[in-house]
Image (tube, rainbow, N blue to C red; front, side):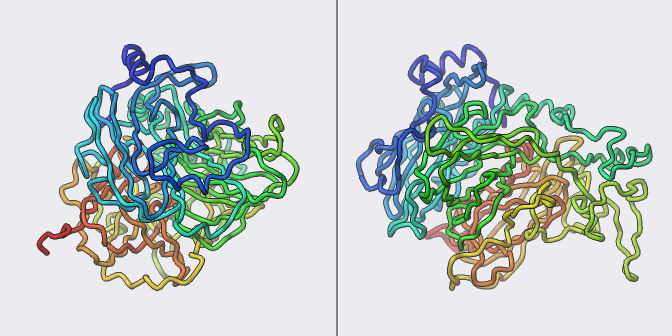
Length: 596
């Protein structure tokens, strides 16, 4: 499933195909360059002709895109990136709700490619997932996507072929509402977060298969028990027997990744300019392959007004954890000073950095990386216990231990099939969380103890009551499973290559999905083709999303109305988890005009 690693010949050939020897300085689309002038993009998508807007966005009803390999330079090193129209990230596509669009995508690679329109409601044949919704785009061929634009908001696009997303094939997609924004702002900026490695995704995957902690340089030292007491040999053996580490926060880390904002590294310091007192809309997109970010702007609170493209009631906060493939729209009102935008990887092995400033050249203090988080007993599915950090607990007695609790016996075996009916205990399952819990009201890993406000899913609600919410008629439980030691990821213990049945839904039925994370890693799960209604206690104001992060040993439920017939991808959006097998197809039948 992986793309062949780039070689020098392919790099040169790709460069020629893409326009020949483009200078590295040209490899940023207009929207991603440092902001040197004021702009507001909300009025730019009004035309119907093909072409670029004044902000360099591609707009209108007919848009042409080319996929090729192009040299990409970062930190003095140059590699071959997979680009759209020759840039990393790709061009901004700006559409208007209610229009029709044709996007002709020509593949100049020597392998198949594709573009998936992330979060967009469209006919399934236009969704862009090879092997599920179409064959893919063969080398030197063109595929034309056609669909009506039925929604508004902040979205993005990316390849669904051969790990190309991890080598640069992604870009922003903004859809202006037909009748104006709910929240007016004077200015807007796009902040596209990503991760870049000079090691191709296939090679990263190979190293993780050989040694799953290959990129983890923040391992627990022998005498660094998080409780402050020395590790005992017994404790170390217990963690080893469970094939776990309290530092397993991220598979791929800053040891190989440079974290980027709008394609630019921390040293480049991408800067967005504003006039003091303006209301600025920040469209934040996590387009990374493997990195969950914690985003904050020290000294500047922000108000969340949209999640995954859907409006939410404004909620002010100081930090968000943004899973891979999620988007958030934020509003800030900065004063006459510079502010650092810090997107720290969730394991705190590195950060992306940008600046908001009233004048070019201004910088703000950059805070140091915070201490790496550690997993606790709650992240193992041991329950909240007394609500404290049990990472220093005596782990030796954990495997199979019996905790009497008010007369109720709790089986704490880490692989007890009774705790997860429906999971096939294949070699790809090394853990079943004994007591998974709903964690939608909890902060992401490592943010429990920060003193400022942090957004949680239960903060999200629609601006007004909804009248389209009906009770589901059945529930589908999906267990997120894996074996970290073998670097195997799956649903219900079965990798996609071993799946014999898709998840079948009847056209227009209302179904509740409950995702149970049996692992100690956070998984951002994405359902193509639909918005789903997150079950977060918001009643008639439940938010609509297309991607949801499930915390370790956590449970998340969402309801979906199967009103889009066809076959739809359903997967973890961590690129290597998806490619390793945490993927399935949701099939909705009958198709339009088909027999019931």
